Image 1 (cartoon, rainbow, N blue to C red):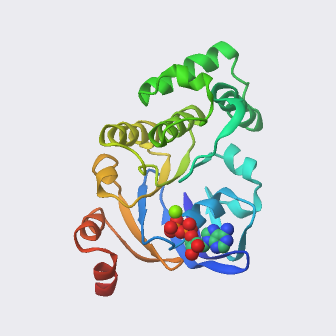
Image 2: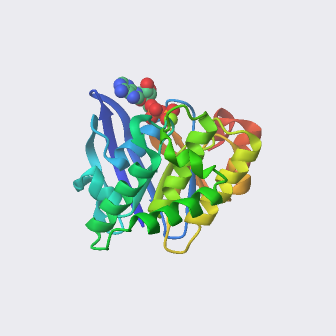
Length: 249
Ligand code: ADP
Ligand code: MG
């Protein structure tokens, strides 16, 4: 459902992605691991369409359509969700306002009726319960004063409400304690483990992969995918480190 071919991208004229190719099939959870500075977050921003990230060549097909030709909001409306490594704070806007606005603008773009206040609140409470996030937190301003773990959980509540077909999750496990890691991992499974969906799961840690069992694992190094394998590849990285595994490749 996602097909990236020979993608090159620059930030401020500096080449970061250097011929990255990767395919994720429908129903697949694909983990991306790789050293710091390899270009993992850059890949997620390029997929989301963040300004300042320039694609110089290559292509990205999402469910057969040219993803790079779409505006960021059109990408979201077509079913793409991005979970950020560093979720942003939005003072002055409550989580509930933000999420209802986001969901209803996506529904409108898809030709669906917007949800009423009551319907939306029921959905939001249901997803907060799934992520064991106190629903009172949804009344607070987006991420303002949230702990690292609360931000990540709130982001998974957002994912549950928007119910995307494809999620790119950038180090969703960073800053989580062991219990929160399990809750977030199980949330990802509950929301995204479905035959028509797909996930790119960027992570450094086997612990998240013990909960969200990936179908495929790829190593991203120096702007390209240098190796793809099954879940055992993540285990090898954990045991031996990037240098040893990449040297052997
Ligand atoms: P990863 O997520 O794999 O750790 P990133 O995609 O965040 O790596 O970064 C890849 C490279 O791009 C790094 O060398 C980083 O310093 C560089 N980079 C990221 N953002 C910018 C920017 N705004 N300006 C210049 N270089 C950047
Ligand atoms: Mg990163």
